[in-house]
Length: 122
Image (cartoon, rainbow, N blue to C red; front, side, top):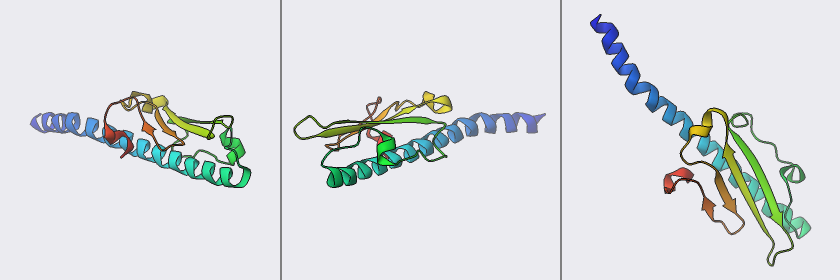
């Protein structure tokens, strides 16, 4: 009986820690993909003198390991001076509980998120 109680106590401590690790890992993969999209946007701009309006135009596909956990969008405003783009990753499914919320990146390099901590982009 004591063994069962000890296992229960260890499980109540380990499971939340593990879930937090998984959320951070998925968030890190999402932020890496956002940076990859930003690189693709800059290359597209060099070739076309305009930013791509969507990911299909960039030829980008979301990696399988994060497709169930984030929805990625990119938009461009080529009429602006200078032209701009923004990229966002909105959590979904089991990742929707992540307190960092939607991660964003602008063409000026400004990184944003719902939480007020810099840890969201680490």
